[in-house]
Image 1 (cartoon, rainbow, N blue to C red):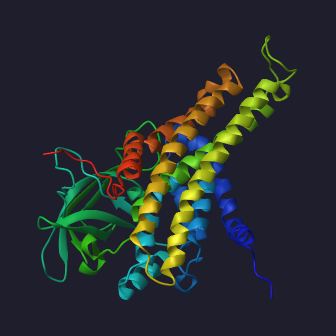
Image 2 (cartoon, helix red, strand yellow; image 1 turned 60 degrees about the horizontal axis):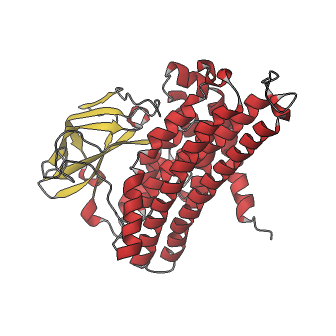
Image 3 (tube, rainbow, N blue to C red; image 1 turned 45 degrees about the horizontal axis):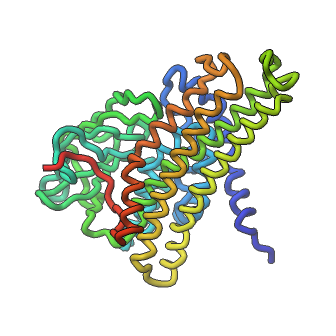
Length: 401
């Protein structure tokens, strides 16, 4: 009996989704130019079962590995980098449930996601709150709890069936409450005004007396050791790696379609110009480096999963995965931003025509790269290497008081 190699298994899995990715890519420029929110692409992915790709087969999913997921995300990011970010909270909550020791909660959510449910996020708050403080509050102790608060940067919430809301109960206890996106008291506002990743619907979510099932609240105190911080960080790197691929794709298409040359050029056409060829080759190398670096960090998560299957995982393995994610973030952010800028060296003024929307690659990469600032990633890695400091397992914002 023959067994598929890892590469053959991935190709068989990816073949299911590549027609959807191609369809998404076809409309990416028009959506960007007119800021048409990605409701249709999210629906196409949902219909194809993409949101359930990590769900075990017995619960309606594809049973993909974490490495296979990230390879798919890079391909999706090449089609439209908004889509991996839209689904970041979705796959994060799914990953947590895959390792949930509470069998009932695990199965309930795997079945929901296997049936097509999409999860968005409502985590971040703005204003003068202290570091680590959460104003959004869960109250009550009966069969339902009540949720009140206002969130910003609620990526993916406009596309979601459920929203994961970071909240507190009392002064110390924090966790995620999952509520139906159409529940009474939930208001989703499309007011994200960033110059990049404009279709992620990262706007405001208002929660005014929303009823919450206590069984759908996951408290941080109940968590064991995990790689979830690295997982969430690597999501941005997958989108960035997809942008790197898209830069190469668009550079090749632009050069192939050109006939006009500069008087001081080195070829009879842009495609025949060795200097233009050199630029495209450099872009390809940068994209390759970004993707390889991302997947090298993802391999650390895969290793942890393999060790989980046979016993306990030492803390050192989680530390190594977190440091690798930060190292990758430092490298990939810089690499893709350089590629997105270098793209314009393939031609002249026509590269900046609005209808081509080539600027979206830099704007999107710049926006993704500030999650979280590279300067702090560099410091954390340096502190770990020099002083054996623990990795930063929390990337939060607030006012130091």
